[in-house]
Image (cartoon, rainbow, N blue to C red; front, side, top):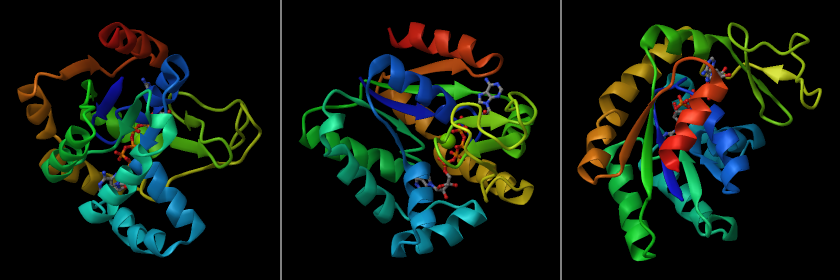
Length: 213
Ligand code: AP5
Ligand code: MG
């Protein structure tokens, strides 16, 4: 399965992807996670990306496409993959199609996770992530048992730099303007599926699995 996860910031793409990789034994490719790792490692690319990410804007297509193309060449992608947070605009979607057509392995499905705006804001301001294992929590919806400590590995939890209210607003605007049009793009290709992303995480996951088969 070669899957693209679509949805606004906070829709639960990362949350559902983490469950899907276990069920389908395919990797999650999150451009946001790759970029945040480059920022944490202090690489030149990370330094360039950080300023853009902190503003809630999109990192250049050239950088992101280079990262994705490299990642897709790795052996673990042969059985399929879950793209999370990519593509993010029509240029990226077209470039991805070009890469996949060349290797004769087009996308199987684009799955949109749909969530109302007021819930997105709470999910983003409340999100906390483990520094060690990347498990996600939420101070409103799914707290860790001990404040700021990961239930799974005991790691320290942190809040993403771009989960501040002003940046969140910008990210949501960028999503509406640049990423939401991809629904139509994949609908026209006949591979778009949608799931209501509100309610219990496991219930949403069951609906996702039913759609993916
Ligand atoms: P990225 O990391 O992709 O962030 P995003 O798209 O804004 O999406 P999020 O990760 O915020 O949300 P999510 O849908 O994964 O939600 P999650 O599962 O965490 O991108 C960050 C930045 O990197 C961009 O702004 C851009 O600058 C750059 N970038 C990345 N990709 C790029 C690209 N392709 N091109 C250019 N630039 C790029 O869930 C959110 C919270 O809600 C969590 O706390 C979670 O626990 C909770 N939650 C999830 N589901 C539920 C539920 N059902 N009920 C209750 N709580 C829930
Ligand atoms: Mg995410």
